[in-house]
Image (tube, rainbow, N blue to C red; front, side, top):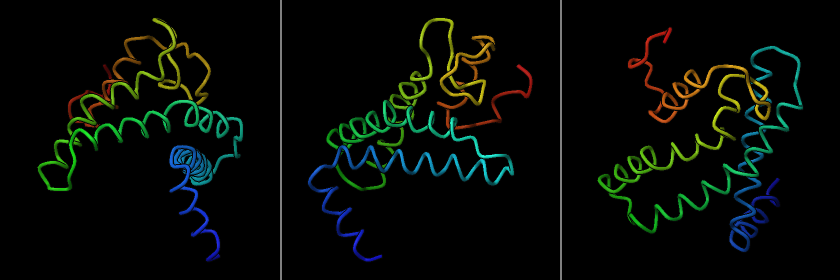
Length: 147
C-alpha cells in the first residue's frame, strides 16, 4: 500500500500533465460508476467509457491549462486572490468548459440525455438554459421548474 504513493508523487513531478489527465479520468470514471451503483441501476460501462473519453479528450486538458494560467495570472493564497480566482473561473472558464458539449449550431451533447456522446433530440433553448444553469454554479432559485 505504501509503495504506490511515492511512485505517484514521482510521476506527478516528472510528468505532471499526463498524470493529471489520468487522475481526472480515474476520478470522473469512478464517480460515474459510483453514481450508477448508488442509484441501484445496472452498471452501464458504455456510459462510463464515454465519460472517461470526454474527460481525457477535453476536460482534464482544459483544466490543467486553464488552472495553470489562472495561477500565473493571480498568484497567491490570500482570501481576496482566491475569490478573484473563483470569479474568473466561473465567469470565463465555466462557459468554455460547458461549450465542450456543443458540436454544431443545432446538435447538443450530454445536456439532455445520459448518452453523453450521442446528439440529443431536445430543443436548443432547453440546452442553452441548462448551459446557463451549469455556468452560474447551479443556482436553482433563478430558474422556474418549467421554462
